[in-house]
Length: 422
Image 1 (cartoon, rainbow, N blue to C red):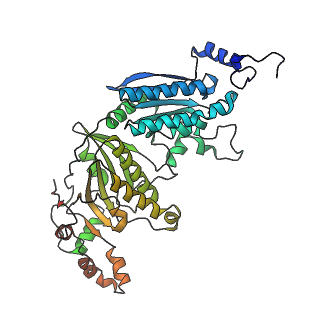
Image 2 (cartoon, helix red, strand yellow):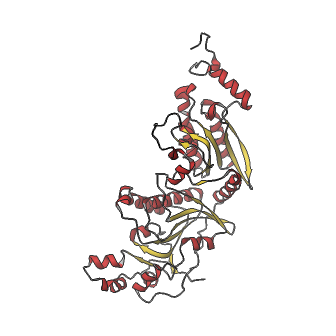
Image 3 (cartoon, rainbow, N blue to C red):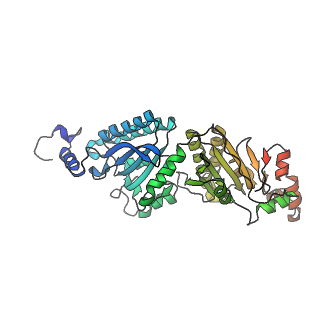
């Protein structure tokens, strides 16, 4: 401590030199706080923007930062606008102690009010995004974008374990582990934000149209022929359907719990002036991260009033030890709950394999259609044959007994219809 008397400018803790540091920061940046808030237009969509000035005390969060953030969120609710946060911060301002740290609760409360109002929140992670800024404005956003090479993590560079893997604290590392939706180069950021804002602010109460079938138009003659047809490598998968269905689309990535499943495509697409959210299985065994990502997608679309299309195509849920350790059962249960709770209209199309509960979890109750190149079964015919202690030669007969063909599903009242091919 210096010998001079502390002044009110040194803040609530009378931290020696804090007032002088703020004065220097203002002289350097022209700002009186670490965030600047206002409104901006992104390709025709207006949004409230929160931009951090890292040169002002490392973009740190203090009491008056909280004042500005609260005002920004409040203004967004008044104007019914989304919030875009351009984050660059080292965390809470230690010169204000716990009074600074509790601003995180204040930010979280404001964010919750905007979620309840059905207003989207997007975050752009700049370098660095650490501490409370990452744990509130960043990780708490509906869609999280990051600039290449940005330092991202709850722990800043000076407080991490010495032996920590540095890649875990990067935008790319956070993308790989399901905490960031996309890494976007600076030159493409404005366009990407404009696309996302257009998608997330276009609400619709009508159900998404059912896609047309991309494969064969003939129905299978037997249960086993239906199974074999769906497993053919030439059968159209989810990407073919999504590319045909949408004019353009943007994807979310990851379950926000440390996992990514490349076999589950989730996002929002533009179709003839409408926004439709989608969750699509890609024909692989769905992992827990895939179910959790789909549940995240459904809940976000439901909150924003956007209809959802799901494409069902999986031999079943992944059943290896890693899947069980990652909570396969809980992840499937959570997706069942998200689908059951959704108020926004859901539309589902069975485009390939419908393997047991792993497929059913993505099927809208009472609003499922099927293509001719598909089947749905309580269990794979090979596994049913083994359980019944039959020989492999009995697999085709077992497949017929399961009544798994599209026309069988129609006769049983399990689907709304069989969609025609192009």
